[in-house]
Image (cartoon, rainbow, N blue to C red; front, side, top):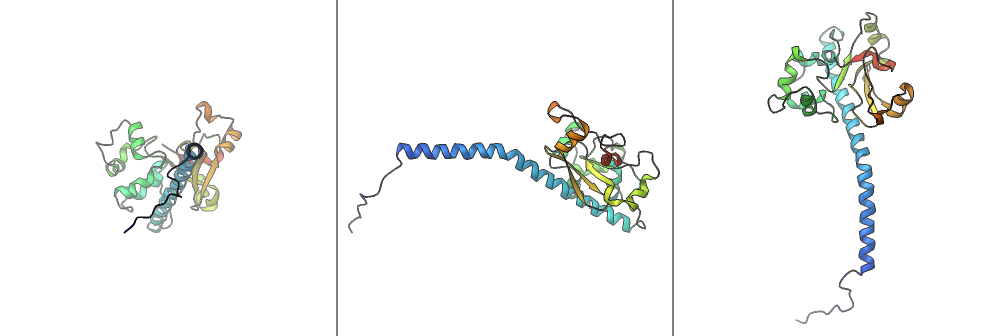
Length: 222
């Protein structure tokens, strides 16, 4: 059988074509490198919102077993009470809802001076007496000593924050959830405008009764 001679076909790229391809690849690479942090941040914020909605579901289950009452605990123990009481299955997958994608259990354990190899995430959350400032990624409802604050959970659930990021974990917004289960994003630019702080200078936003932003005065990371 005679082979076909494809003499009319070119056998490679010209130098100019190769330069154009390299230039296009360079432009695309630069675009991807510049855009990647924004995409990751957006995905992490969406992950935090999903975590908070899961936490809200556990609190609703708790209410069903306690005549519609919210946990009496303050701060992180407020949203961890269903875990403590066994209303949440104590497995790794469930435990991860209490840690932001931007500040994982490994990150928090390191900040707490704990080697994550020495303790599992379930064992960590089971140590109720050890729970204190910065123990999870999130802040939980607190009265701040104001007894009337609890009535806000029933009277104004849509304007009372019960879970939030403990601090400016994300690049562009601070996530929080109100008692009605809705999640919200307080944009970085709005925080800087309202408080006068500058995150580029290393400033951070505090949540808790003394917070400069009113909506975060009903949550604490203690």
